[in-house]
Image 1 (cartoon, helix red, strand yellow):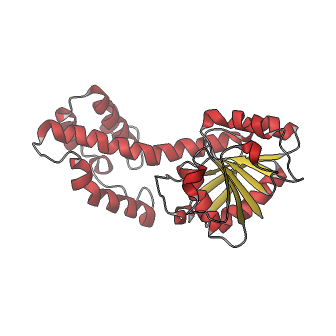
Image 2: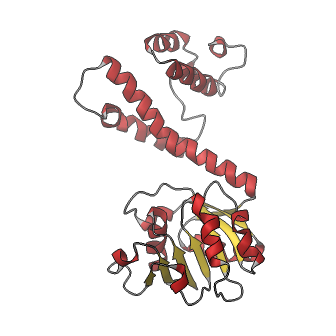
Image 3: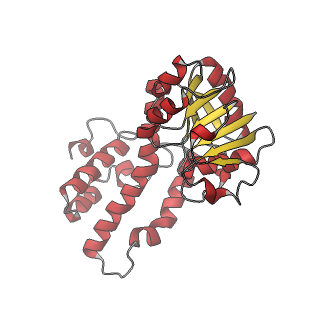
Length: 274
């Protein structure tokens, strides 16, 4: 099946590389203003800078563009030639297939296709392996996207608009908020510890971070939880709160402590009165 990708950002290019490695799909087109930069990486792919220069679309079309460009790009596509049963999907985590309503009215099958993964520059296509891929849209689109998600090594899940947004918000908590944890830890360390290491928290706490994640994966929750909240150790909690200066950091510490404690103690425990 032919695949066309519009937008050559981090996700778009990683998806293109992954599809290129799969013999069941043919990467036909990449549309990007930077198309001429990819000649070496995609020698057998039609690399164009504008949608208007693509003769027609068929198979699967992915809109790998920023959220605020999805409806604009859809409008550019809606008058374009396409074969029957062509599916167009955007890859936004927060938006649903309704963003493509102009295409649906024009006869395209529409969906959203979101890999719950973080993609950096030059990301390995193997990142799709074991990655949750939420798929939402009309029946034809969903049925065509599921095999692709599986071929990429992902774990496809059909969702509705609300559950898709919930899954995306949860992913932000796990991925982006982990960075916030390191930033908060670094702020605290720099207040009290004299060290030339700018990213002290990353350098010295990466071991415990990896081990904690491994324990969560292998042991599950709440079994992997350790520390003062799990023990109900109020003395240590109060000592920690006493050294924190930032009101937001104090509020965050209390919130996270209460959430962890909920797995081990009833509501009458003093830890919930922090």
